[in-house]
Image (cartoon, rainbow, N blue to C red):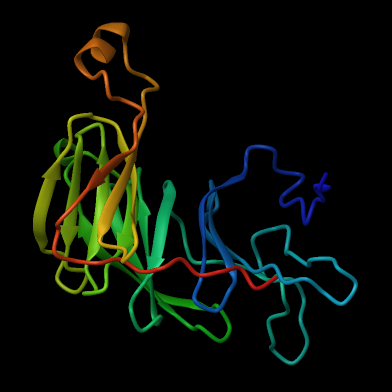
Amino acid sequence: MRQVEWAAWLDRDKPHNRFNCRKVDPAGRFVAGGLLKGLAQATCRASRHGGCRLGGNLRSPPQAAGKRPPGAMQTAGPAGHPNRLDWSLDHHTLYHVDSLDYSVRAYDYDLQTGGLANPRLVCQLEPEQGMPDGLCMDTTGTLWVTCIDRGRVIRMDPETGTRLCTLEMPVSRVTSCFFGGADYSDLYMTSAADSLSPEHLLREPQAGHVFKVLDLGVRGLASCHFSG
C-alpha cells in the first residue's frame, strides 16, 4: 500500500482560504487559483531531502538576490472566483476564468520563473450567457469555455474575444472541458447535478454525466506532467 504524505499546508491561519482549479504548466510547475486571495501560483519541487517548499501566505517568501525559490507563491491581483486555466501555444500567456466576474482573463507568463504580469480582460460574458467555469486551449490557439447553468460551451478567439461557435448541451450545469482520445480530437465535458431540484432532474436525466463531442475539426493538447 502506498503512503500518502502531506507536501504542504497553505494558509493554515486562514481556514476560509482554499485552492480551486489547478494545472501543471509547461515547465512542470503546479499552478492553482486561490479563492478569496485571487490568482495564486504555487510551484512545488521535491528537494534533495524529499520535501517541498511552498509559500504559505500567497506572497513570495524572503529570497536572496531577487531570485524566486522553489515553492514561491505569487498573487496576480484580485479575482472573484479564479477557475480553470491554460496556457497559450507559445507558453507566454496564462488564461484563466474568473467565474464570479463572468470573465476570461490573461496574464503575461514568464516560463522560466513562473512570473505573472500585465493582467487584462479577454472576454466579458453577460449573466444570461451563463457563468464561465471550465476552459481549455486547442492546437489552433482558441479557447473553449464551459458556461454553467446555461448548458453551453463557447469557443473564442483569445486575441479578439470573439465567440466563434457555441455547443448547446442537453444539461444545464456544464462544468469543465478538455480534449482527449487517441489524437486529442474529442472534446470531453463534465457536468453537475447538484443544486438541481427533483423536478429539474426529471427534465435532465443526464445531469452529472460526462459527455464527448466528436468531429469538431480541431485537436487539443496533451497535459503537462508535474516535475516535482
